[in-house]
Length: 196
Ligand code: OGA
Ligand code: MN
Image 1 (cartoon, protein in one colour):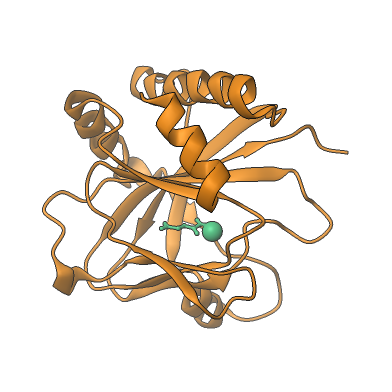
Image 2 (spheres, helix red, strand yellow; image 1 turned 135 degrees about the vertical axis):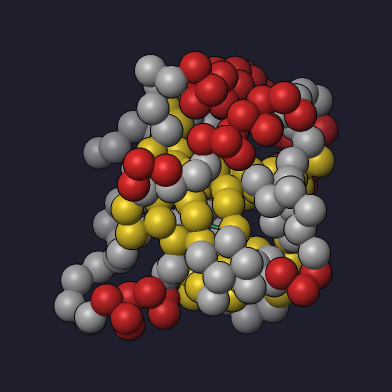
């Protein structure tokens, strides 16, 4: 990984899009793990109150946290751990840990505009998304839209293509996942500082 390129870009714009930072072999193995076989995944419903239909209209993914006892998941986590160390060395971010989950959006779902920094919990510093969609086509939709802090101007549109990774400052960019017209797979994660 070209850490200088990553840190320079993060300092300059607050986000970076990487093309195939991980090997094709590992990426294919991650696709294999991002399958809801044996009903490993569960709905990522947020909040409480509204009924299931309303919740799915906000956020349609089903998720499964990576399992560090699985060799494939472990390889991804080790790569992220190495990135964490290097980011701390270069940017003094004091990143304490990294957590991540697989996400599967079924056709017809997305994730409405939101911030990854939960109210009263400001320990998420950097968000990462690694896309696992082989042969993604423009008609498939499911692009990630990054907005400016005010939530109005579009800063970036990211195609969820296999091997694309985005890293962005969690607090700076509200973002949205456009409706996907086909099954959409990814790994979403966060580098965090130690919680208060
Ligand atoms: C999230 C998220 C973006 C994406 O899970 O919080 O914003 O492109 N995901 O999957
Ligand atoms: Mn998000």
